[in-house]
Image 1 (tube, one colour):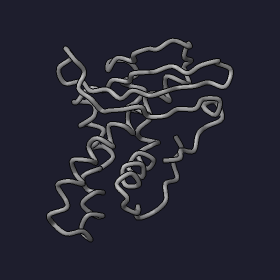
Image 2 (tube, one colour):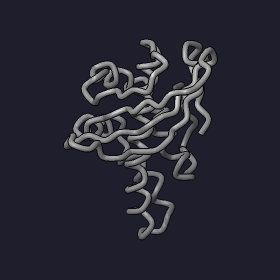
Image 3 (cartoon, one colour):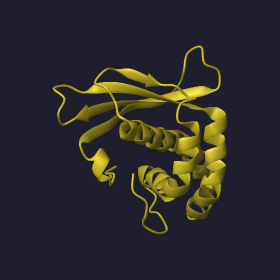
Image 4 (cartoon, one colour):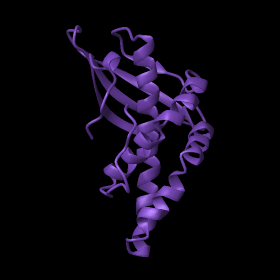
Length: 156
């Protein structure tokens, strides 16, 4: 999915590498890994962005993901719903960790592979999600190949 980005993020090229995956020896935490390349860097880095299940569940409730999915999935056959809901959970985690990565990029990132722990940027991510809820829901619906009910007005 192509993401609109703010000027301070325009110098980075970010690609989801994989995830979400459970974090070994960290109960209740999952992570997505992103490839990040800054124009001035000779090579890119990998950034592992972790998110706790509790924060993810709270954010899912705040953006009303289940309600928004239910609205859109009414047009599909009832037996297709569970597969969409399962995939939506993974896509939601990807979108939220991408938002968390954006917070890290704005704060400044050194050119080394790194891990952003689940406890980092928690209040900032909660606050950011208020403004970026439409982006996150649109990301999920677009990746599911379900046309959103209206275009997103939020930017990455």
